[in-house]
Length: 332
Image (cartoon, rainbow, N blue to C red):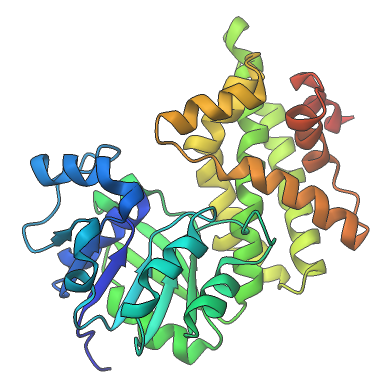
């Protein structure tokens, strides 16, 4: 296996930065580029060597570049890690297009579909960059990856051989990788798991006034969410084992236990208006991709003719003014 000559993470969001920390810690030649949207974060990292959403400091070996230093950050780039969320994937690709020609692989960390087109992120990058694309799925919270806590992820690509040839260089005792050629399945799982987390967060919000956890209901609804996830993923051409593995069930569980999508659901469940709550979280730098994903699931369920009661209940709460307790009606 040939060593990676240089890895550049394009985009200094929490996950992109966490992956840059992981890459530098492995001893790989790593760079992190903060794009113009990341300028406030870049200023903080330049002063403190820490991303504001992460506790771990940046390794001394990690080179960090500002928005005006794109060419320097990309010099010698062999593997391009795309650190944008789904909303910014295409614009990021167009920013870096001129400097990533000839890379061995483009790797996407985004989880969801592009809002404007409904395309999977790998399709966006392949269209814009004309490169072979891998997508990372599975239960991987940025903070835990940065802190080197035990993590298992799925790297999916056009073939198992290609996915393994790139991903194996990023494995470590704390970061184990499962390889897959079910690229659509992994990406659709990564989109749906955020919706499941919003629904379970809604139950957390409903229970706050009485200090109740709704553990029984959450377990029942999680099982329902997993069943519906597998239904839709397989209807869209993915594999059932993908939906029932790390990319589906695993990611849905970790996202439901913590994270911005669960937090958003909790706030809505406690009575905060869905639209203004989303704006307030985004103003704090927290992207809640599950809101757009709720629309995507609703659209795709209609296109495939599937009845997905749990996901439909979340859609009605977020977009049709239904009471948050409507999610509990799925148990009936």
